[in-house]
Amino acid sequence: MKAPANSPITEESMNKIVTMITEGLKFGLCPGCDPTPWTVSGAATFRTGATDQNGNNINVGCLLRVEANPTRGAYR
Picture 1 (cartoon, rainbow, N blue to C red):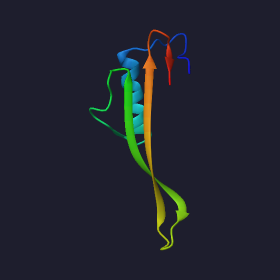
Picture 2: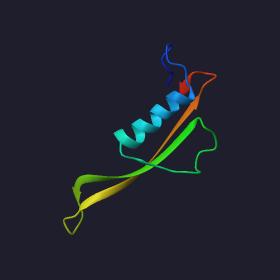
Picture 3: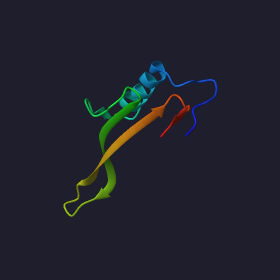
């Protein structure tokens, strides 16, 4: 996805993404997982409304990675 024209990808914008992922979505960061400062990786567990055979809510693991390309002004 293209970054907004008036918002270039910088270290500050990457820090904002980290804050959105950790504080907003409640993901834990995966330290040592990211090869560059332009990549952010996180992990979380989501509790669903579905239940298993014992009536417990089913938990689903989730991994997230955001990669930025400052020269192209895009994220993926």
